[in-house]
Image 1: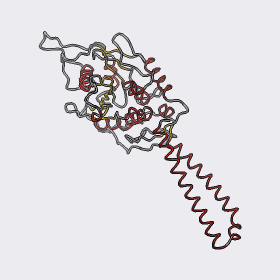
Image 2: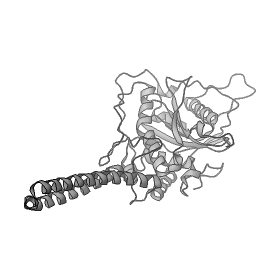
Image 3: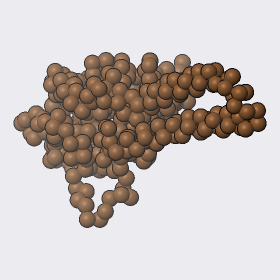
Image 4: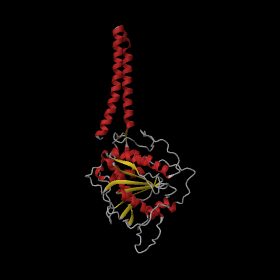
Length: 370
C-alpha cells in the first residue's frame, strides 16, 4: 500500500476510533455522575448490564470498522476482470447514415508519412495484457478507492463492489456527443482512475476533451495526457507519452468499418504527377484522420472506438508504420476493455509505470519489446 493509501486508511481508522472512544467516555461519565448522586450501591446494581452493553458496543464498533475498511479498499484485480461495459442504449431515432461511407473531411496529402498498417496477433496482445495485470495487481493487495489529487472513482457497476462516484444516467444515444459521454463516463473514467491508483506518479495525466471543428457531428476525441500547465519549458515535448482516444457513433463506425480499418495494409500516397488522385476509401479517410490528429498532438498511442467495438493502436517513432490490435467488443471478458485500457495507458507512460511487462513503441520490422 502506498504512502497516500496508508495515510487515508489510517485517517479513516483514527476517525472511527475517536468516535468509539468519545462514546465510551460519555458512558463512563454517566456512570460517575450516577455514583456521585446515588452512591455506589445504585451503580453496582446495574454494572453487569453496563459491562454487557459496553462489550456489545465494542463488538459492533469493530464490525463497523471492518465494514468501512472493505467498502473503501478494493481488490482491483478482481474488479477489472469483472468490469464489462454496460450495454449502450441507442435511441429509436438515429441520423440517416451509411457506415461504409464515413464522410470525414480528409483528402490525400503528401505530408502524411504513414506507409503500412500492421495487425498485432490476438494471442500476443491478449497474453501481454494478462501478464501485465498479473504482475501489477497481486491477488492479496487492496486499494483505497480514493484519489486525493484528482478525485473520481470507478464507474462501471460490478456486483460486490461499491461505487463511491456512481454516474447519473447518461440516457439513450442519438448523436456523437451522447456516444462520447458513454465512452468517457464508463471505460475511460474508470481506467484513468485505476491507473492513478496503481501508479500514483501518473496522477498528473488526465483526460482532456478535444475540440473538433470540422467533423464535429460524427467524430469526437479526448487525449489522456499530462496537463500542459505542469510541463516546464526545459522538458522535451517532441516525443509524447500521451494516448489519443477517438470516438465515432456505431451507426457511423460499424464493426465492418473497423475491420476494413484494421486490415488496410498499405496506405496510399497521392500521385505527385497526377492532378486527380483516386478518391480515398472510408477506411483510408479514417486512417488519415487518426494520423493527422495523433501527429498534431504528438500522441504515438491511440484508441478508436464506437463504444460497442474497440481497437488499440500505436505509431512507430517515425510515424511511418501503425500497429493495431484485433477488434474487441464491449462485452469481451478475457481480457476486458478496461484491462486493455490499463495496459495501453501504462505502456504509454512506461517510465512512470515502472513495470517490465508494459510495451515499448515497436520498431519497423519487429513487434513489441516488453
